[in-house]
Length: 87
Image (cartoon, rainbow, N blue to C red):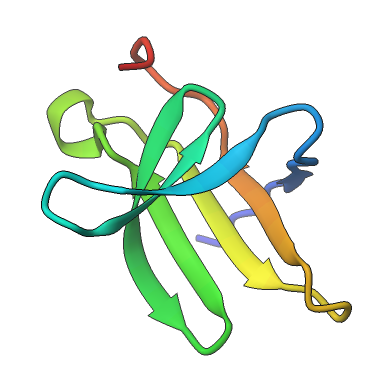
């Protein structure tokens, strides 16, 4: 079954601030707005992040980060809908 590509929403940092934080066990996490994401995998210059509550709430929210041609970090929201409140 072929699925059509879902449109990607570019996350400008003006509208939802994004920053890196350090988790309790020393791992790097991505904080976008009030939600936290954990690193899922890295491929070349791209990093895939999943909601930190994905296991507990089966949340499907995902973020992709990569460096654009200007060397700036770009955030792409792959699925921006959380099924839980921020923690």
